[in-house]
Amino acid sequence: MREFSPNHYERAFENWLIDNGVEYVTADEHRNPAFARHKLKSFDFLLYPRSGQVILAEVKGRKFKGTSFEKLAGFECWVTTEDVEGLTKWQEVFGPDHKGVFVFAYKVENIDVDFDGREVFEFEARRYMFFAVRLDDYRNSMKRRSPKWQTVTLPAEKFRQCAVQIHEFLL
Image 1 (spheres, one colour):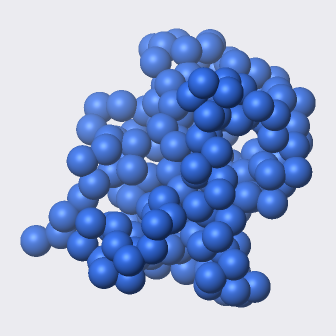
Image 2: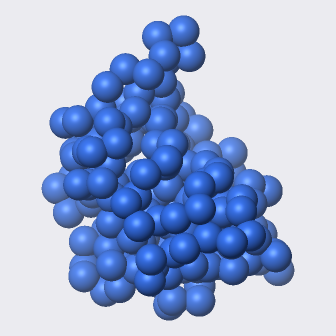
């Protein structure tokens, strides 16, 4: 029997991968001794898209409470500095044929939303939108969000420039 992540954002993304025929492996740091011996935060998935480049994906679940996707406004895209450092190190460990990516999984909160023609994924009676931001793009444009919580984020304009809907990125 297949075991899915207890995190609904990761489960939704994993089901999107299955539905779209994207090959992948979960990176469960609790069961994989290769991850356990490193002091780095693990990523969530190794993705094998048709393009050939292997993707180290870190899924970040967020809520979208807006009513329109037209201008790509109102998207929380913060991560921890540990997320950035861990994904950067794993990208170095795996080498140049592997690229780190943050996958922002947005659970759409409102019923009446203008998706502006973008793909919506329905899973467990919830609606999700998935956007990918390459690690290198994120690192180049990130700004400190909270020193106390050690978080960083992308300014809204940079998010609009860097974020790509997941099907455009992987398919």
